[in-house]
Length: 263
Image 1 (tube, rainbow, N blue to C red):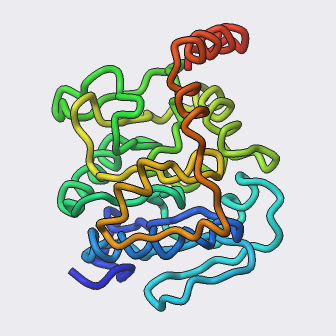
Image 2 (image 1 turned 60 degrees about the horizontal axis):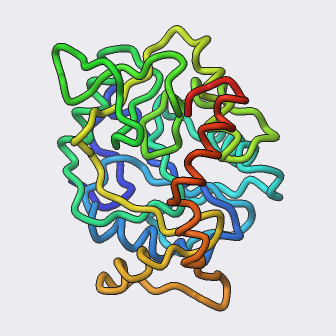
């Protein structure tokens, strides 16, 4: 295998780009994100892109796509995707930090299955898990129309044109997961994902709505990842307890019934 960001085998199954979508306001977490990719996925077989506004990351292995002023998350992503030529993308949010070595052969098998089944999407972690198992590969399954977070932004392979079609330039990432999940129901192509108990790429979030998660800060410290606390606050313990509370979950269920989709 080559170094991070180098293309590997040729042909339709290698027609993939790894894309970290971000914006200049998150430049402080880029060293951690890309440092862990270098550490845990040195044989990443796809060209590696960073979508940003005006800032670049000083690493020749990373192709930075500067798309201009930040209007919305979806607009930034769409403008970046329009400058990438590969048929498929492995979409990675900037606060997804790898936690252990990545099995490249397994990742490739997931993409091969996606291509073989003509799918538009292949989610690589069970968050949420897929619904109906595929008889020939039971660790993956189809994600039903109407399913919660059908177009989740957890790490996944996307057919690039399908992702662009689902984007609406005014939407935030949170808007996209709800509204694009609805829009995806009109698509003919399958949406696939891994099932319960099976994950392809090990990672964890480090941010919640722009604030650092204390448990993530503690987890990544032994791996040499540091954070600039002059640029970013820690999420409060009180708010984290509220988010995990039964009352918060009940209110979330009530809201989901109002908007007419189980999430």
